[in-house]
Length: 312
Figure (cartoon, rainbow, N blue to C red):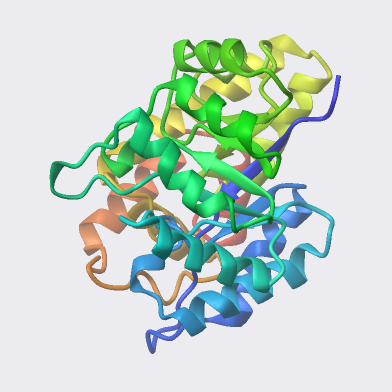
């Protein structure tokens, strides 16, 4: 069995001044590298919409330098309405040396939902020019989800499509349809939710934001799966699902809970928080997060709590 791996949509760290804290970002990415977890810089968890082009370029440079071929590093540019704009962002990321560009379909703005033909045409416009490795990402947060057969058709036309990231798509029905439609090997990365099934059916790895806070726990989950230690694996899976359910109260987006976790547990980037349009968490939110996280009794959280002086 080939080793599975995890790609983390990693957060951008800010200083109290509001500037990108490059040292904290490097240390944050290093936490992923230490757990053998890859990084997708910028994107939604990285508050890419609130960053300048120069700032995004620096994040790519730091992530590429920190990962240094040890784990995958990719760009996670935001969805765009036109292929021209998406191509420009991908070319910019490729010029900074990322291994792969994670590209969403056309943005579902003002109720727009691409037809299958429009979705394929969008990537035709991009991939006839962009020869860099690409991951397709049919994330429901762009406003819709294309049919699995549409993604398969793009994979069959363009060899540079090396992966499909099923970010935000839980369960196994979509995964099964996608596997059935593919006629060549393409890595499919799935969420932790439902991964006990999808990994068994051939998923290449995991994708998500959990490793911003719990890289050791996610790594343990993958190691236990690979060693077929099912009883302990089920326990760690349950811990990750409890954590996911706990942080859902601060979604729809991940930066809220990620930055609270950084702040409460003294992790790199905890001092600077988020950028607008996010507002700083209230003291009540921080206290609720602290109490709830400790109540989960997850070993990695307990370890961080002790290091942060939250527990004896």
